[in-house]
Amino acid sequence: MSSTSAVATSLLPQTPTSPSFIIDTKNKSYRHQYSNMYFTRLAMLKQPVMDRASAKWKDLPGKPVFVRRVLDVVKSQLCWIIGTVYMDMPLKPNVLEDLGRDYSIPPPPPREKFHSEDDAVMLEDESGRVKLVGERLHSTRLVTGVIIAALGMETASGDFEVADICYPELAPFKEANLSGDDVDIMDVDGSSSAKDECLAIVSGLSMGDPSSGEAQVQMLVEYLAGETGGPDDQKLASQVTRLIIAGNLFSRVWTDNGDEGDENRPRKYGSAAQAKFSTHPNVTLSAHLEDLASVLPVHVLPGGDDPAGVILPQQPFPLAMFGKAAEFETFRCETNPVWLRVECGRKSKSAMPMGTKSSTSSSRSVPLIRSVLVTSGQPVLDMYQYLPSPPSTHLSIACSSLKWRHLAPTAPDTLWCHPFRERDPFVLGETPDLYIVGCMPEFSTQLVGGESKDGKMSRKCRVVLVPNFSETGCLVLVNLRTLAVRCVNFTVAGMGCFVKPSARKKERDDP
Image 1 (cartoon, rainbow, N blue to C red):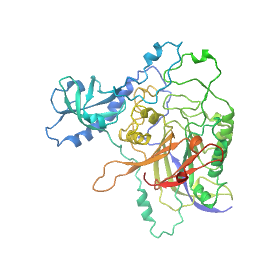
Image 2: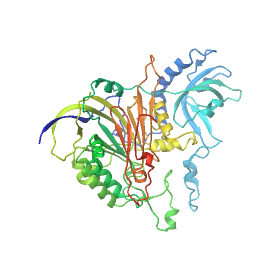
Image 3: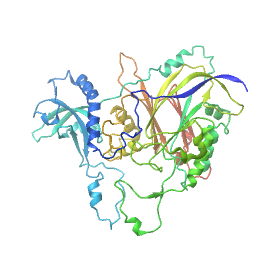
Image 4: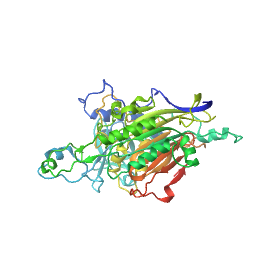
């Protein structure tokens, strides 16, 4: 056993400005009205929108004025207003219709899209609501709950004709790091044997689904433990210093016993069907998590199909669910969403027995801190129902949510969430370096940045959509220094999982 110099990735405590999604005892009340969230959201984002709109429209001909209340708009006067978007959509679920329907008739299946030609866009604040019209809206994709500034004038019919729209845009980056390019430049002689730290993300294991292959999950565990693959595979796996499982660890098994009484039983608003779970998948998953937690830190998030509370933010799984895996300090159950601050590059002395893979990688790189925002995908999937596709995609929606500075704007309208009173935890006061969205239909990634300043490229956020592992066999690796992304695919012959040859191994710096 020898002592070697190593660089560890460590989890740092949250800062006062970091989002917190823990529902503490003080806020664990369901007596409050959801309207408080909309008022709080508008109050938190009104100033950033006002600052950007003032800078954007201050030199326009006609000198548009800012009207503080949407109901104080004067007809035929060029002005701009700030408020919360509300999408009036006839196809959107209606709780009153759900309560009043005839339960002797089976309900129709849930719609894939709420979008239709009869949709109307409203803008509201504390004073009231005004309808937005105009050609500008045809090229703008909005969802309920977004805070915007609208430039235009009121028409004779009382509508507000929009000429331009302004968003809050990206919040500031709080972690004072060098960019990935700056770090690379510092290694001038090229003689360093540094290996950049990688973050591994997987989603949608769907344990218990008869159509999913547990052999793929076993291959995944062996790969991350460095027990399988060739020299190149083991070299890449040795750079993985942390694993995030972003939701849907278990599959949802629908009840199908032919009982007509169950079919006609009233269901909760927004739910598709009742579900039941077996304990066998939990035992199998706990064994895999025990193997993983013994070699590297593991973060587990609940998802929409998991036996957890359905309202956002979903609270952590009880540690007792995962048996011996919970005994490791490297195993953490997180909220969904969760904000992590990961430091890489800290030098330490570690003694590692031969054949043991630790959460460190040999490196002499410059220390830096990455902020990582992870969700299990429910907000993006919900917003996807509001917008026509094409042109909207899951990736474009995830990128737009950063520019809106809100993680889940459709909550609480069509996305269940906790009735917060004094704060809206989904408002982004800072932009993460890495935004991970799990449980997506396919892999996709993009760099999102703000406007350039002084001719220099602005700092960017890496957005990564992680597909369901049970369907794609895809493990996503993100280089924490360069934010480059690589996919590693696991396939088993005869499992019905098809992976395009071009997607077996790919590394992307930009889409």
